Length: 247
Ligand code: ATP
Ligand code: IPE
Image 1 (cartoon, rainbow, N blue to C red):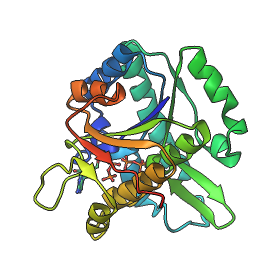
Image 2 (cartoon, helix red, strand yellow):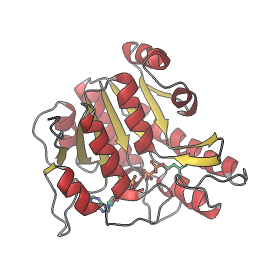
Image 3 (cartoon, helix red, strand yellow):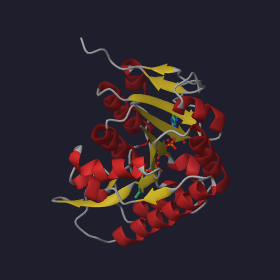
């Protein structure tokens, strides 16, 4: 079983608010369908969720007491999710959309039994970055964090981050084919202006996944053939995260 995170940068054009990339998502969907792999899809907010979250100062790091903007942000995410599901359906998959909150609230393998049942039935569960509430208030939970939690509760073999670049890039813009902790630390200095922490958070979550036994890959969604290879676990153009040794 594989968790596929579709980054906001591939499913939307982050430079233009509410710009959805139908053709890119369809070709990703076709790549997934052609491998026949059991996949759970998580997508980000891109130019739908982030501009609204930003407008209302909603973020993953600082919870807000006020519920202002929660409905608007979720409305944008459900709108984006409907488009993603339409593209996947057109690509031959049978998406089953769900909000991640109830699943996260009752984490653990038991809570995800219904999700396994969906996979067995041949459906492709689809979820997304969302707004959640805790004691401290409302905050955004990123698709990356949801992916990590799904990998743990489902015991996923692999998590593939699909984005608009060929993999994790070094400071010279070259793809790091095998990323280890040292590379990750070097990337931590890079900053981001979106609601959920950007590439540094992504790499941090990836290392956590790798440490708990899930293989992690980064690949471009503009290269569906490379995505197919990553799904089939054969050599592909992109980044693989090296599992830190346990000794
Ligand atoms: P963000 O974290 O910006 O919200 P996202 O969740 O949309 O991104 P992805 O779609 O997975 O993430 O893509 C990662 C984005 O981070 C890409 O758009 C890429 O341009 C940008 N990026 C910044 N620094 C790097 C880096 N060192 N390696 C790879 N991508 C990087
Ligand atoms: C953001 O999810 C969700 C909201 C803004 C509500 P992500 O943080 O996973 O989105 P991307 O992938 O970076 O766009």
